Length: 171
Image 1 (cartoon, rainbow, N blue to C red):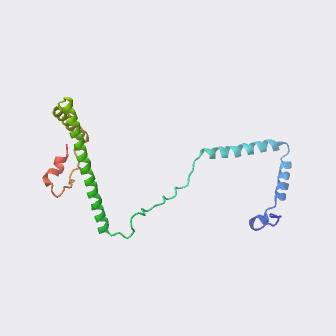
Image 2: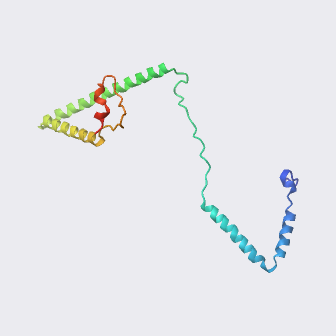
Image 3: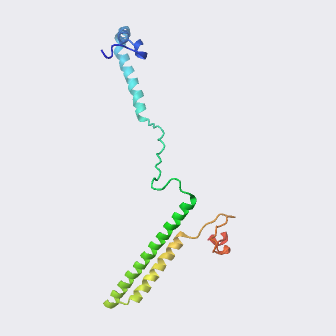
């Protein structure tokens, strides 16, 4: 009873008329009706088979932006700069502390090596020479800065201007 009343587009659709029309066309085809049905089915299958091989996709939806909510929204540039400087100082202090600890560990190993009868000074020199050779090989691998003709290499305020000229940067 729910679908007994048709509204909108479906009120003009009558499936009984559709079936009657199909029966009339089927009878008019005579002896060729099965051939016509087979050709029609083959054409339909071929079209859908070709469409299956094609790939189509809609444009991707834009990404959703999630703002960092741990920082206050109304920070001024001066507050941001102050916080960045404080973070940089904390980072440098942590690096100094780590370097101090590394130095203490090396001293402990040197003391242990001396007690074991090793020539720790010779080992340290060899290690320093090997490290310097690796650093030199890395620098040679990276190479010098290649600057296009007429370009200027930016310099730091405390760096002499002639040391970073484009002529000295090219190999």
